[in-house]
Length: 92
Image 1 (cartoon, rainbow, N blue to C red):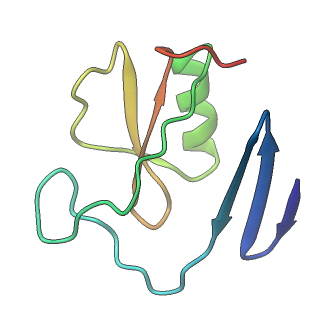
Image 2: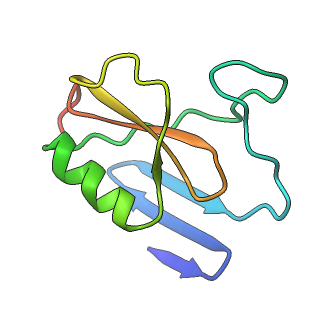
């Protein structure tokens, strides 16, 4: 793992995920509107409620649209970009 104030790199089993801050990137207007989401991030978790609580405490917000909250939760990062958490895939 590598991190700086504007960049994080995470290495897993054959995967390198890098995340970089983009200043002034406008929030998307998901699920409808003129600004589509730029990517889809959906981490697997063991416990939806516990993961959602932790992510809300870290600055995420719950999206107003929840298509299937018993299977996955849609959250918004502090800048308003949506991501999901799910138990549909193994977390390990």
